Image 1 (cartoon, rainbow, N blue to C red):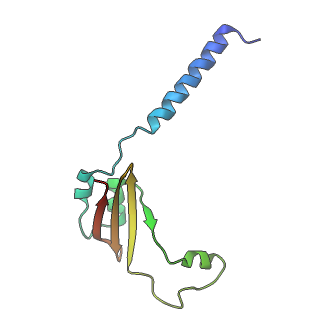
Image 2 (image 1 turned 90 degrees about the vertical axis):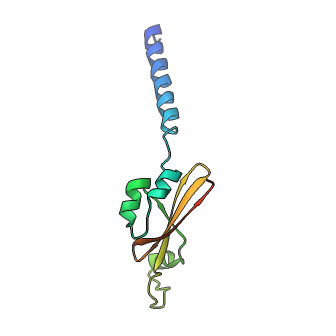
Image 3 (image 1 turned 180 degrees about the vertical axis):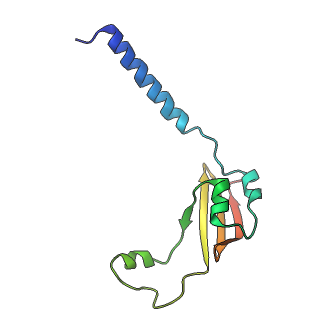
Length: 111
């Protein structure tokens, strides 16, 4: 049978864990108008990620799926010259288009 002090310590531990998990979701998002304004043409993905954190590459033509089983679905075509990355924070998002590895365009949604 557990003693009252052991039960109290366990309850305190559970409470602290719950508080930590709830606070982890309360961090300030980097998806802000101020950070959007810091992004300028010719920045690299690394420079943008220094401002916004890691982004998610969007789009794609399915070539990775085919490549996993050894199929060349490109037909020898070159890779696309533009790639979009998106950063989301709540209902806000920042999308940055990179052309040849440099920022070529940026747009927001939800601001």
